[in-house]
Length: 172
Image (cartoon, rainbow, N blue to C red; front, side, top):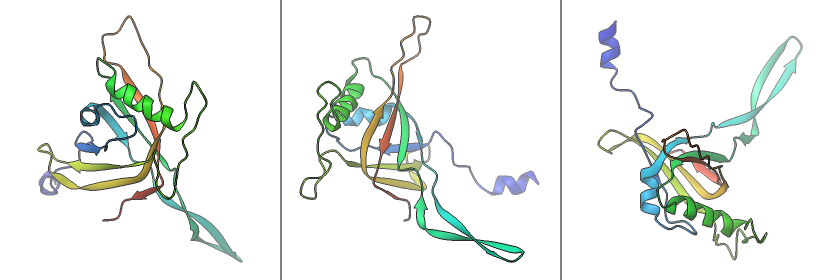
């Protein structure tokens, strides 16, 4: 039986992915951002349903609504000089400034100054795409997570980021 399993081929591995984050508002060094990403969670997708009852039986049908959270998250290692963190913080403050309470309009004459597409591609160890691809169109930073310092640890600082998006393109 193990030979049958061996013939199935390699499994997709969690650590083999690339995140393509284009220059975003406030970015300081978008190239190194991709190399500091630790993990990325693709949100679940689905459709709402409703039930039809007839005497002793019931049937479930898909409704007219796609149900999914329009957010995703990732974590990154903070670089020594905080360039990536500060770039993401700049983006967040362009959207909603925590000090002054100002907001940037999402859409001015059909163009958004705060949204970018973010692409996730599964790959092999050589960086060759293996078939998994997700494009999060119209993404913007929703939350820049907390920063935790700890005198008892020598581990790198990791920060969680939550993004919102308009449309998930997952059909290719």
